[in-house]
Every structure is written in structure tokens, then in C-alpha cells.
Image 1 (cartoon, one colour):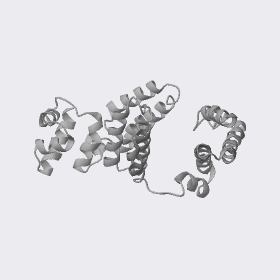
Image 2 (image 1 turned 90 degrees about the vertical axis):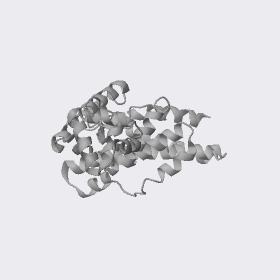
Image 3 (image 1 turned 30 degrees about the horizontal axis):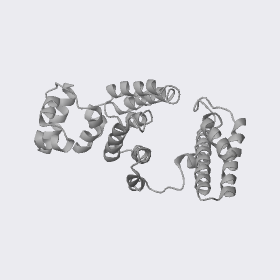
Image 4 (image 1 turned 180 degrees about the vertical axis):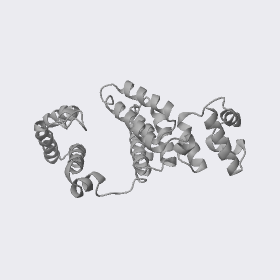
Amino acid sequence: MIKLGEKIKSLRKQKNISQEVFAGYLGVSFQAVSKWENGNTMPDVALIPAIASFFGVSTDELFDFNLLEMEKQVDAICHEAYNYRFTDTEKSERILREGLQRFPGNDIILNNLLYTLNYQTRADEIITLCKTLIESTKDDSVKYDACRILASCYKENGQDALVKPTLEMIPEIYFSKLELMASLLDGEESYEAAQKQKNVSAEDLIDMLMIAGKYLKKNGEDEKAASQFRIAQRIIDAFEEDFIETKWFDATVYEYTIEQRKELKQLLTK
């Protein structure tokens, strides 16, 4: 506590600003800032990226972490949490929050935490975290993922007018890093990238076919809609023969598209 408080105080004095001005930027009272600097309390986790951004430093610098060692530990925390993301969301969230106690404000952990929060019951927290990451992170992958999650949260909660402006913050990219790694690297690195991109591409294609089909169905073009649904169904069925590379996945495309299979069955029988 004392170390962080002293760091905040030192950075504030270097900027030559008062506690009141700093507090105003963060939307807290100057008494709160005073307590941080005196080592009596810690800033809320969600404020850490904003504090680092205000002073123009990384969250790692703010806490004087050993970067390489921190990255290893953060990766381990996120990997453990991912193992429970789909089977025990509460446990996944708990692992990440414990990680944030060790590494407050870490962008990667916060980004992973967003995947454990329900869009409807935790919307306020999701929106706050996304906006904080978009404004403060220096990692583009985190920033644009936060934009995507924020837009999805707005859509889920009926704030449609905010969806498009949020999505427009994401640049249009016609290739992915995984595609390039699969094509340009060799050996296991190429194979790993190909396996990961294969699953991402399959899931995206299934989603796009279902979206296109639903649009066509809504507009009375039932045969065209059915063609999209049948293609999606055939893609899913093709992955029934796939296998799991347990180093990177805990399920195949066929196994984690159970809900889409149920929905497609209903759509094709209507």
C-alpha cells in the first residue's frame, strides 16, 4: 500500500498538480487521493489503468513490477481462469480477481475478467471496465477487444445507438496474425496458428451464415434463408470428425456449437 501511495504522490508532484485536480480527473474526492498517498487505502482496481494513463506510465511501472516475471505469472493466472470460463464462470472470475489483488489494474487480467461478467446483470461494471481499457491500455488487442465487448454489452441492453460508434473505433483488418503465422512460420508454430485460426474461422462462418439466414427469413426469403442454415449445419457436422489438441483447446467446434445446432434445427423445421 505504502509503496503505491508514495509512487502516486511522487508522480503527482512531478506533474505539479494538486490532489484536487488529480481527484477531479478520476472522479473521486481529494480525501480519497490523500488516503492513497498516505498508505491508508488502495485505489479501486478499476481506477488503476486510468491512474497510470494520467501519469503516462504503464501499470507495471506504477507498481514497479519485474515485467518478464509478471508476464509469466499473469499468463498462468489467465490460463487457469480460462480452464473454467465455460464450465464454472464464478470460479474463473474468482481466480482473475485474486490475480488482480497481486497485479492491480493489469490490462490482460482485466480483459480476461470481462469474459466472466454477464452482459445483463453486470452491465455497469462491464461498461466501466471497457471504457477504462479503451482509454488507457497500450495493447491494441486489449483495446479493440474491449471495444467489441462494449458494443456487445450495449446491444444486449438495448442501447443500440451506441453500438455503431463503438464498433467504428475498431480498424478494418482483412487478415489476422494467426493466418500470417500459419502461412509464414514453420513447424509447430505454424501448426498451432493454423489450428487456432481454423476454429476461429469456423465459428465466425457459422455465426455469419446464421445472421444472414435470419435476415433473409425476416424479409420473407425463406428458401434463401434455409440455404444459409443448411450450409451452417453442414459445416458444424463436418467438425464432428475433428479432434481436440488439448494443449490449446478443451473442446472441438462440434462440441462447443451445441446451442447453434439446437437453434438451427428449430430454424430449419419452421
